[in-house]
Image (tube, rainbow, N blue to C red; front, side, top):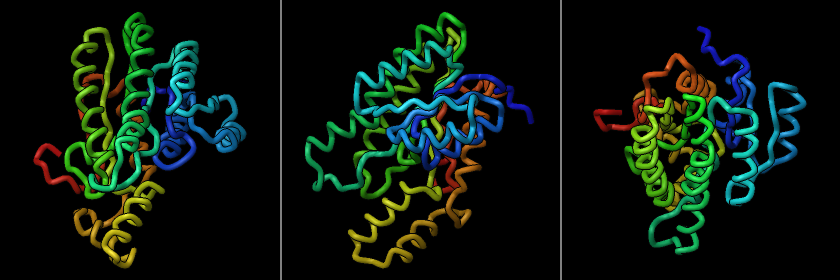
Length: 258
């Protein structure tokens, strides 16, 4: 299936690892030009070495307001067709373990930069008459995950923002959606499982079995399959999908709307 993404410029956050890397590779396979942003200059350079003109490396720390603004300027200069908002999640932890500094940092890393960057991109997209913003979040938006109160809270705020954004800007051709992964084989899920094992004083392998027992598919998700879903949602073929939170979780979430 041709997703009609050839030569379209798309920003991808966290492009050097995990789900962000999988999405980067899939978009390039579809013919897109990826503006990959992440903190690791070496890993970005390695992707440029591999993909050449189809990959534009842009080191950026999304905790830094100036770095986010410069990223927005680059995406506007390149007349980006869309942007994938993705970075590593906030630290694991329970309510009683966290300080207000932890909460402030989680706001900056998980919510603030996404609002700032999308706000910067909106005028370009309105003027052009189309644009696609895709936020990679977590199933915790629909079903909170134990020991992840920072993520549970901040990602729910992102969901409220995206739904509102899609309704306010839809008439100007903007689409804003959320792709919410469940348990995929990435470093992030490794950290979650390690934390659960620590808190319970249990064997790490047994903890993983308990997690996967909640997944009807019975296994970790493949990042490459997740990336295929992201590419479709970004594509012109998904024009009528707007303001949605789509879970990719093997059936983990029990809510009847998925």
